[in-house]
Length: 86
Ligand SMILES: [Cu+2]
Image 1 (cartoon, rainbow, N blue to C red):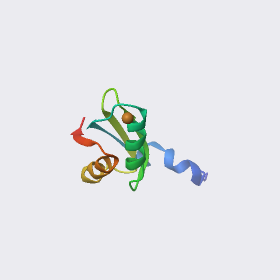
Image 2: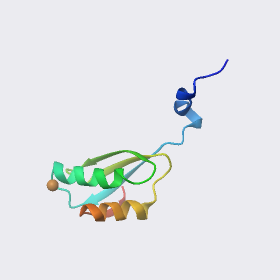
Image 3: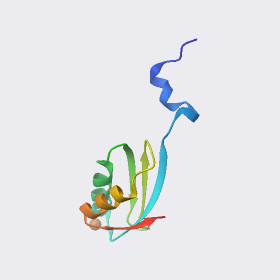
Image 4: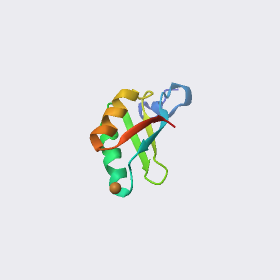
C-alpha cells in the first residue's frame, strides 16, 4: 500500500530534524527574543526558533544540525552574543 507523500516527513527514522540549544548573552526582554528568533529563523534549514530572555537559552530546530558559525553570525546581527551550545 502506498503511503501519502505528505506523511513521509514525519516517519521517525526518515526524519532528520535536529534540535540544538544555545546560550546567548544580552537578551533582556521580548523584543530581544524576537530579534534573535528572526535572525536565526532566516538561516537555511531552520524551521523553528525559541528564545528565552530570562535564561538566555535559544533552541533551534532545523533540518540538520545548525552551523554554529552561522548561528553566531545571526545572533551577532541581532545585536547579541552567542556564548556557545548550552
Ligand atoms: Cu529586549
